[in-house]
Length: 43
Image (cartoon, rainbow, N blue to C red; front, side, top):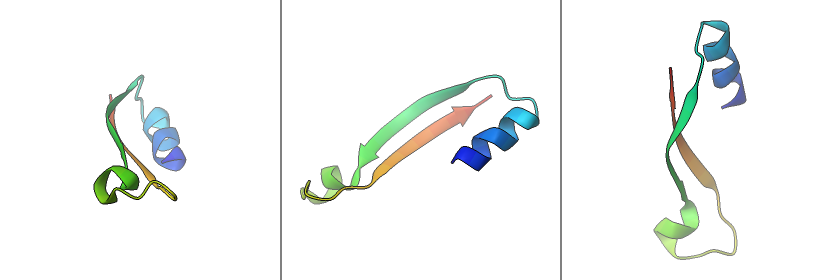
């Protein structure tokens, strides 16, 4: 994620917007250990 955003900036992107965010706990119902997922739109 960090590398992708850095590369997008290097290629001229000027902004990023969070499109969606969720965790594995939301899908499984088990919140003891979760992984976060984000969808980001880069312009």
